[in-house]
Length: 123
Image (tube, rainbow, N blue to C red; front, side, top):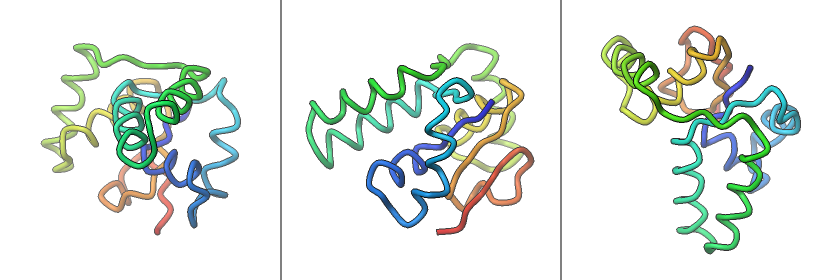
């Protein structure tokens, strides 16, 4: 199972420099977990950069994947991860979501570089 960080979704949606790195993973929704926090960040980004219709379209794409809600187990794991790796709350929740599913986080956010179960692409 895989979690694509919000930055990966945005790269793919905007055909950014790393879009090709994320595209094969985003094409296979059966193996893709989308934390509800990633949905929040994508919706917020689309509202800011485009409009509500585009934001809802993007959320529709995420709904074809396995959406993972933030529950107590993930929240506590995220708190542990935040302290251990000095990650901000949102980053820790996304990372904990991947770990809890026994999966891998795919990202281009530098603060994840070198962490276990992370595939990192430098911008």
